[in-house]
Image (cartoon, rainbow, N blue to C red):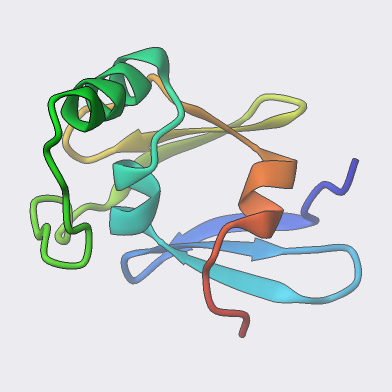
Length: 103
């Protein structure tokens, strides 16, 4: 399992520095929209089941988020967002493959 050597929040993004030196900048709004917790997954499934199409690029509800806590959990990291949401644990492997720009 690849685990970052550094995890920090910076200007609306989660910054991960991997052992090979590669840095990843993951927008907080994108992470919040993709939260893997059961409640968020259920809400996304319900929207899909009802045929509702969400244009994440046009969804600005999470654009001003910050992180209030970052808690490593062994296989991933639990993020607490400024909207109070703290239920998702983001696995390292999932974050490593998340479609965020490399720095």
